[in-house]
Length: 305
Ligand code: GUN
Image (cartoon, rainbow, N blue to C red; front, side, top):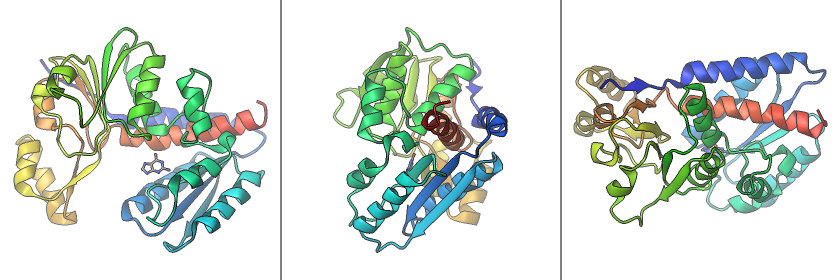
């Protein structure tokens, strides 16, 4: 059986084109504010991509970069100003925040109507009750990949590996809303492979490089890999990547010190899955596209459109 690769790029491009076309028709410019605190290198890359895409789609972008030692009160004051700013429709505080800051307190201070990350308890509650809500971008992107790839969700056995507030829990809620039969697995799940190998749709979001092996995957399953992990060890790379893929991976390790791998062992998934999202080039690209879609949605809702 040949595996179908579910590439994120054409789907992300399609969503961004839809947002851009709608933005062009509006009589105002939706605005997104991104707040970054400190110097986390991954956050710097992600925020750069969010700011650039916002501008490319014709929206207004405000990037607030604060020093690592900024107090929680100072961050709260920034959030309060953005809550009140009429030109701002979406507010995103990039995580992780520095250790001395209470993340929950900051996220709960964001106006739920501007909460384009969907992390505010009001939006979490609305999602869990099946009401219209601003929904976390990465799991919403997974649903778009499935739908736009013509993969039926209703009635399927879906297993979500991971129970984070950012991905696992909202992912389970969205799959449930699409009428899948949903199981959530985590570090305390007994005999994990016996559960995951029942999945017709398997979503991996645990943050462990290549953790999902062939034995975890049912023949022909759709496997969605949400993980983004760095691999710098060449012998670990040989366990994860096919011979065809290795030269490119080794070149990346040589050049940058690491190559990216998801939570699924791609070499083994290729031999079992019916469809599979690559890393890089899969789910990751959807996150920014869905943030743009959420910003447009928040802008329209806030102005009663
Ligand atoms: N850090 C990693 N993923 C995310 C995300 O989706 N939103 C925010 N705000 N921070 C993140």
